[in-house]
Image 1 (cartoon, protein in one colour):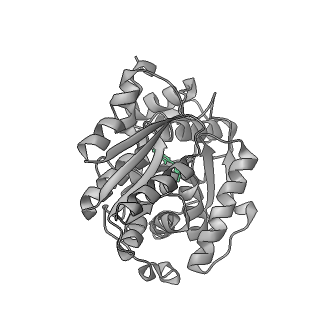
Image 2 (cartoon, helix red, strand yellow):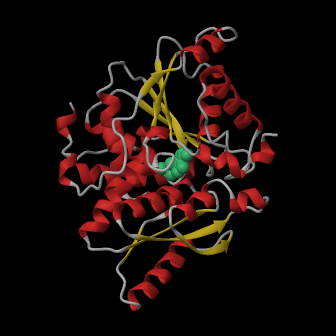
Image 3 (tube, rainbow, N blue to C red):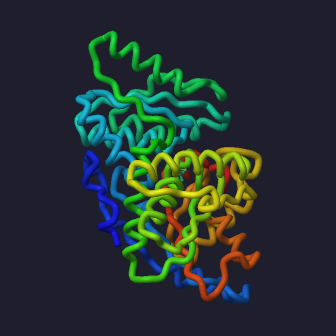
Length: 334
Ligand SMILES: *Cc1c(COP(=O)(O)O)cnc(C)c1O
């Protein structure tokens, strides 16, 4: 089926190890079956193992974004994110690999402790040679701040390429069309795909890619920041623009979002996240992250408890990475 979508039309700079592994969660499934009657078959798509400086979902997007940047002759990548942004860290690594500079703008979406400010992804940004140009207050128009930085660099004779937060535009979302094609080629029937959704590129690419190959799999995004309807609108908008790029169509009904696991807000730990993270760590030896995949996995466990996901369905959780962020959140776990 994969030949329906011609991914080779798009410029691409190789950064990761693909296809990522797809593994059964046997011990977790057995554990859940002790207390729930109809637990579905649970699998995990290891996009935490993309191989780029501790991996994660931005690697797929960056293959296409950096490919585009190089095609345009750019010599500097600019991007933005929260202080503990996994996207910023993977962009820093991608820039190093491509021989480009990386300039980061970090938004203080919340005030935590010294470890949040300096450890985890921030430590790696610096090790990877990125320049943290500025740390801006919560609520700053980060896109405008990036454009203004790009103007300054152009005036200085540089060729900057601006990557939106999370790498979420149609070019970045192509990375998750690629993941959809890997899932479609998997040797198991995939009824549900569940993952954490933030800046929307992951879900938009998955939905567009799965529609392109007429897969019956449904995709549920577990929101880590916005209310359900707002997130559905945002994912649907990007999914439509991504679908157009690959010559297919998506409907609003293809976009499913659960917003009940956000807690107080983006990047603020919840009890269900901590419990989900500990459960997967102790049954399978797999580490989730506190901001995205931990809340996403809490949403998956919640859906099993409610019977939304049940035997005989097969559910694939896409592990989008981010465990390095744990070092910025030690106080939430000890
Ligand atoms: C960015 C990120 C997500 C969310 O993906 P989007 O494409 O932004 O919706 C999920 N998990 C992790 C670990 C991330 O870094």
